[in-house]
Image 1 (tube, rainbow, N blue to C red):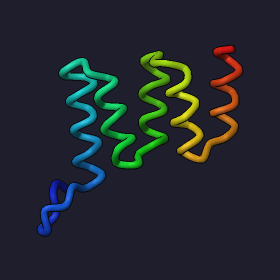
Image 2 (image 1 turned 180 degrees about the vertical axis):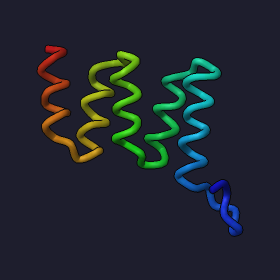
Image 3 (image 1 turned 45 degrees about the vertical axis):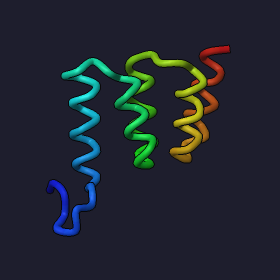
Image 4 (image 1 turned 90 degrees about the vertical axis):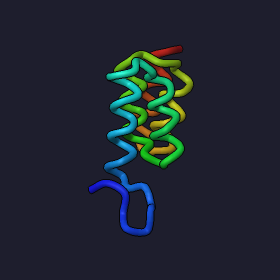
Length: 79
């Protein structure tokens, strides 16, 4: 994996960077933002949910991940 020959960042690179941010540096919000920036919405939502970040963020990420059922369930849990 790693960066391709053309210098593009791969999905694997993004996930590794998010792991470093969240688990090694303790910056979960930064990891979620990185994943969201790279359109890895479901992974960002799972990370945000697992670390009990803001309910609105979790709902939005599940919505962007096209998982409407989880978005609605998350919204209902936090009414």
